[in-house]
Amino acid sequence: MRFLVFSFFFLCAHFVTAQNRQANSISGTVIDSEDLAPVQYAYLYLKNYPDFSALADEQGEFKFFFPSQFLDETVVISSIGFEKKEVSISSLAKTGNTLRLQRQLLSLNEVTVMPEDNFIEEMISKAIDNIPNNYPDKRHQLRGFYRKVSTNYEEFTKLVEAAVVVEEVSYFKEGVDIRIKLESLRQSDELGEVDSSMTILKHRIREHIKSTGSTLGPSNQVIKTYQHNNGFRGDAYHSKTWFGKDGDRFMGIPELPTYRRLMGEEIVGNDTIYQIAFSSKDPPNGSSYLKINARNHAIVEYQIGWLSGEYQTFAKFREVDGVYYPEMFRNKELRLINRDVGTHQMDISTIWFDVPVTEDFKKIRVKNALGRDEEVESNKYELDSSFWKTYDFIKKHPLDSAIIRSLEMNKSLEQQFKRNAKD
Image (cartoon, rainbow, N blue to C red; front, top):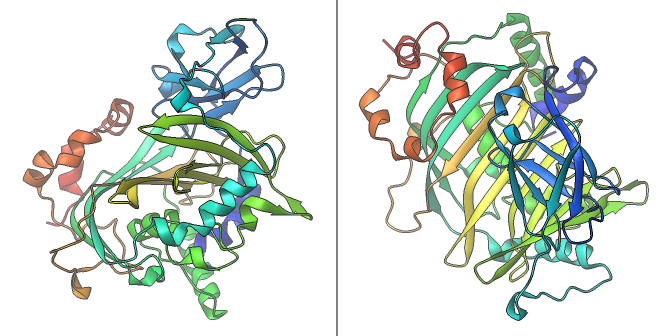
């Protein structure tokens, strides 16, 4: 068992409540603007928060749930053969919406001929086989910005931000070879109700797993977010993992079938990118998917959710000199700090990355690297306010105003950062 969280999934699953009890919803129908026919299985998602999504049915009808703090967001509607449509939530009614999609006109050099039989299976199989060709095989470093936001219903209860440097080796090697250096950290107050008995329980479960001889994943949240979401490295060459050689997690087996569906395609430069949804349910609702570049069969983006959406990983990659390096990782999981367990109480951890450095960099020494079980959320780190004022990642990824308002109900974030730093 690679991660403590996997064993904890099933321990806590019977506590899980309905997702976001105070969620808003919109419903309606997606139709073809030319003949007014329903657009079957159109995919809807929030533009800036794509993990909130919905799938229209055979009649083009949909019902889309989302948290109320996103009332100012934009919904994107996508379907193969149609142009994407963006609509502000504020312009929609709660029910009875009719969303019209324009048919997509393709020039001759944009037309991609797809084989009718086994196209999806072949595309996924080639993507798995080409992992050794598409991802790094030598040492490199990545500057990264880590942010964890914790939620409780419609309120945000904790913020942790860190500037990190990741030193990677070949993706053929195991994750224990990763070194991550923490350059600076700041964190808010803890506004959630913490039950110390849950901390003790998690520790006992971890010790029990260790006593069985099973492999434990890192408990350090930064390392876990990086390693857990980077499914290509190390584990990609083991047969029974998500991106394993046989790919049975995506292909399915007779006793446990996996359903797949082509959700759409997009032209990026001269490349055609296919989005393939997969699920144990038919049809897939799009919450788990792969995006594959038809040119080199590289997986450029993926999202995997399990249980009923309580756990979700997202990864996006960029191509640099013919090799794909991470651009963004995001991990969502239940926040197990008290007995009020449910999808209203989540940890959402994200790491954004700069372009990789492959030559002439100073290696991270073992003593300066984060320990796999090191506690990051502590007051042993000094606050460097001047660093954060000039940190370029903050400008690229500003904190959402809804999060700021929620966390600053009693005290400014700057005051909280100072309070929770080393004296």
